[in-house]
Image (tube, rainbow, N blue to C red; front, side):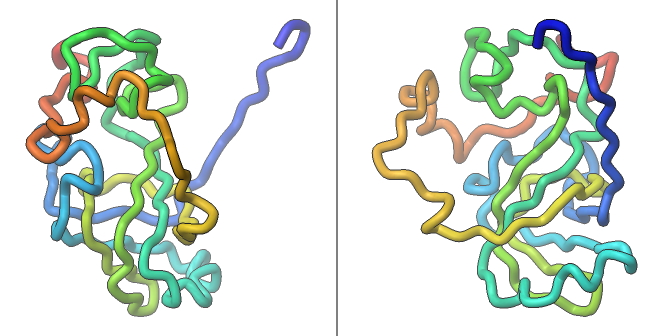
Length: 171
């Protein structure tokens, strides 16, 4: 924005996501490709009152910080293609604001622990927010998926190959 000052934004994690994945390499690249993978979310005590009534939802949206991603590039080669695309036309973790989004199944809540399924997130990832998934809010009919149209069939077999993790990984 011309003439506007940049505003610093700070977020405080509300919890930590736990999964069977100890590093980015090998992680399914979307929740729909990680069917059955279970994990849990540990909510910090001061945020537990915010979980009231969440148990009535079968799916939740997790917003989290890609804490292991390397510095971003505006052009990236995503997992499902061998061509470069603008970072905003991908879900690559290395982005100007490394925020991730996953829709996971909520299995149960025990005090400050949310048991979840279909996890595509690295263990120890800081959780920024939780939102309930509501099909009437979130589903869209006749959605176009751009360059992914011809690549989406590879989703189930694609895994993180490490290209977006760490500063010394493949660029």
